Length: 356
Image (cartoon, rainbow, N blue to C red; front, side, top):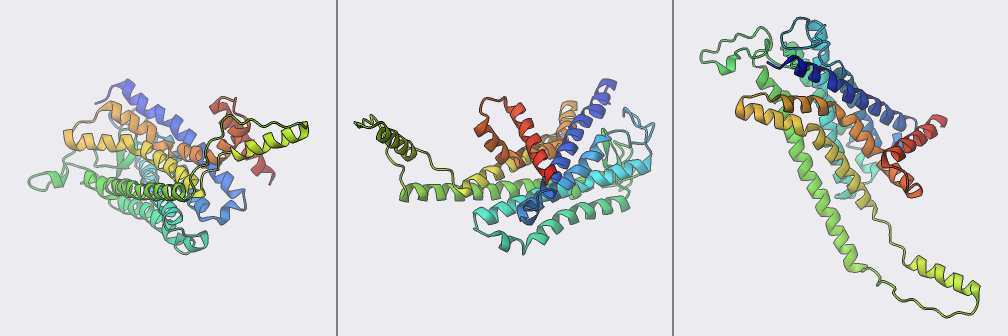
C-alpha cells in the first residue's frame, strides 16, 4: 500500500504532463489542418491520426484518479463511479491506436527511404495504415468493456481485476476466483496492450535499422562517386583592381560551401526522432511491467515515472514535427536560447496558419 504522499504524487503529477501533451496535440492538429498542402500528403495525415489518438488519451489521463469509484482504498482523489471509471479506461485502452500509428509512420518512412515509393504509390495502401491503428484501439476497448475488464489501477482506470490483488482463476489450483470484476485481467493486459506494444517496439527497431543501413549505404555510394573537394589553403591572389578582388573572393567562398544533406538523410533523421519519442514514452511502462512479472513487486518510483511519461507522446511528437521549422529558424537566430527560440518559432508558425 502506497503512502498518502505517494498516492497524491501519482494522482497529481500526470495532470501536468497530460495537459502539456493535449495542448501539443491540438497544436499539431491545427498546424496540419490549417495548411492546405499538408493535408494532401500521406505523412501529414498519419501524423494527424496519431495526434488525434494522443489527444483523446491525454484528456483521459488528465483526470487520473477522479473517475475511480469513490471510496476505493489506497487511491487519493477518487470521486467517480463504475461508469466514469469504464469511460476513462475505454479511452485509455484506445491509446493502443497511437502505438499502432507509430508503426504506420515507421512503415511510411521505410517505403519512402528504402523502397523509394512516391506519395502517389503510398496513398494506395494508406487506408490500411489508418484502419489497422484504429481497429486495434476500438476492437480491444470494446472487447474489454464487454468483459467488464475496466477497473481501477493505482492512478487511473484501465484493464485490471477488481479488487486489486484478488485471486484470478488462471492463477488458482481449482480455477476459482475471488475477483468481483475483470477476472484474469492481468492476462488481458498482456493480450490487449503489452504484447502488441512490445511487438511494435521490436518491429519499429528492426525497420529503423533497415532505414539506417540504407541511408548509410547511399552515403557511401555518394562518397565513392563524388569524393569531397580538397580544402583550399593559403589562397593568394594578386590582383590590381578592387572589383576583381571582390569577385574572386566571392567565387572562392562559393566553392567552399558545404553541400546540403540528401533528402533521404533529412527524412531519416526525423524518422529517428519520432522513434526516439516513442521509445522515451514507453520506456518506463515497459521496465515497470518487466519488474512486476519477474519480481512480483510494484516499485513506486517506476509507477510514478510510468504515470508521468505515458501521457507525454503528444508533446514529443510536436517537438519532432516542428523540428524542420525550428532548424530553419535557428539559422537566422543563432544567438537565442533554444527554448525561447522554439517558442518564438511556434508562435510564428501558428500566426502564419491563423492568417491563411
